Structure formats: structure tokens, C-alpha cells
Image 1 (spheres, rainbow, N blue to C red):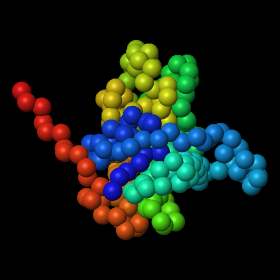
Image 2 (image 1 turned 120 degrees about the vertical axis):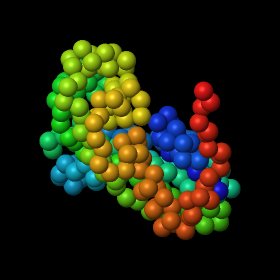
Image 3 (image 1 turned 45 degrees about the vertical axis):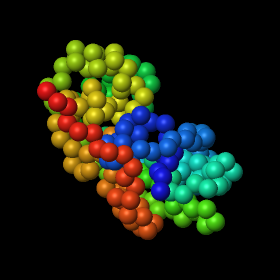
Amino acid sequence: MRVLLASTSPARRALLRQAGIEPLTMAPEVDEDAVIHAVESAEGRTLPPDEHVLLLARRKALDVVARLALEDVEFDGLVVGGDSMFELDGRILGKPHEPAVATARWEAMRGRTGVLHSGHSVYRVAPGHAPVEAHAVAHASVTFVDDITDAEIQAYVATGEPLAVAGAFTIDSLGGPFISRVDGDPSTVVGMSLSTLRTLANQLGVVWTDLWNRAPEGPEQP
């Protein structure tokens, strides 16, 4: 049984690989801004973070499932879609894209705690059967160190790493030393909650260990 990640995110792919799963990957063809705008306009409201990330996670997974029905009718496994947003003081902090925005974010986050919302959509796809979906949102509170200096913020932003990630930070790379605490599944902060994915797989009748298809990486030798 295979796992197809409806994303080309290196962090999400690496997360699954570390958990013993070598995933296939396919980039979903979803205009995220257009999807959110259409739903919010139709309903006359701003979607709260949980609804926002879950809507996009489901649309991404569904797009890939629909393409599989045309391109790979023999696919047997799980399709996984995800989306994340970071919330601080009730404000949603998406991908900053610009260095000045990332710098301002870090100045505001210094010594503070925010919440990472991560939507998950998992489809069980099998030949001759209609796809079946399970979904959930996971949360993790993230606390940033209070003594990060302006020079450190500038150096971190200059690497380009925080520009294209939700909340302008990572925990599994250069941003890790500037995070003092995570409450919740730490993998949520990387991009997906592994414990949530396992629960969803179980709901779809799939045993998590049956998805293992790569040998774990051993410790480096001195």
C-alpha cells in the first residue's frame, strides 16, 4: 500500500520518510486564495483558522484523488493533503514572502506563544472502490525565546528560510533554536501531525505499520 502526498513540501516529505514511509508526491492544482475567497464570499464571513486549513487540505487531497482516477486507476493506498496557518493574538500569520514582513513577524513573536493550526485530509483509494475520506485539524502551541536579538532575526531572515513557511518559522531547521517550547504533537509544527495521520488511517481501516516501506536511518557513526 502506497502513500501519495498531495504536496511537494520538502518538510512534509522528510517527515514521512523519517516515520518509515517513502511517499509518492503530486502537486495539487488548487488556487488557495480563490478557494478561500469563493467560500467566504458565498457565506459572508471570514473563515476561522480551523475551517480555513481544513478546507484547503481537503481541496488539495481531492484534486489529487480526482487526477488519480484519470491517470492511475490502479493506485492502491492513501492520499494525504494538508495545510497550516499560524495564529498569534487572534491574527493569522501566513507566509510572509517579503523580508521586511518576516522581520516584523519575528519582532512581534519574540517571547510570545502562538498556535499552529494544521488541517489534514486523508483519502483511502483502491481500484474498483469509491474513495473514502477522513479529516481532522491538529494544533500545537509554539513559544519563542524572549532573548533573540535583532541581529539574529536579521541573520535568520537573510537565509530566506522563513519567507515561504506559515508563521515565518521552522522547528526542524534553522528556526529551531529560537523556539523554547512546543505543546502538542511536535510534528504538527513541521507540517503534519503524524499522530493525527495515524488516527485518520485507522479510521479508514489502514494499520499505520502497514505503510512502512523504507528502512529507518541508523545513527551516524563517529
